[in-house]
Image (cartoon, rainbow, N blue to C red; front, side, top):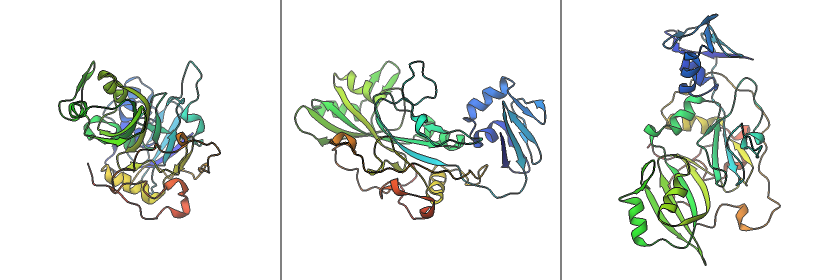
Length: 318
């Protein structure tokens, strides 16, 4: 499998070059280099090496021909509505259904999941071919907001809500404090809340509620950064962002839009009216988010290449 990439004449560090090519995150590529899995012009690479135009970089079976001046393209970005009962992993000893099973096939690249959701959590997953973009959205130091709709058995007291947003809740792996928490109402025994936090620790939302003796009966991620989950994307369906929207995300995270290669267009399965009945097939019956300007407000499920340059709404930088 061959790739072509363009980088500055002064050279680019190999781990960054490989991450931009979508092979993995920069940290993973550093590990590959340290393990001797990367070569530069036929010689085993070491950390700190840079590639310039004309070089050939090999990472396992991937070959990247470094170019000087060429047209550059954007990474691909998919929005996917994860269902409960799916895992966000390519390898599972239990052979459970994986979100990667539903994604379009790529040649010479791979899909990188931006933030995981556990087996029983549904909602927005973002996939990209850019390791750099994934890193900017996931790394804790960038503090990108995640917003969730949470259905709880019972109702929180004002004191519990204040504790979650002010003092925080101490878990075994550290303190958790929600940046925002609002009561969205409910009927009967179940009650909806909407919360925002800037981290992605494993099962952090469920564990925080459990620490106060509250059971989460449904959890759904509805926003990641400036990207909202469009209500028209039903469970198990996806939509690919157009060039204009990808550019806005790249600008929002502070990345240059000069990326490594122009991906080949593929057919994306568009969402269609769900034949199932029941409210659980749609976005939770909690009120919609506040009128902040973010991607996803106009139902990007029907986005296509022909509408790539349509203007969309975005939020302020974090």
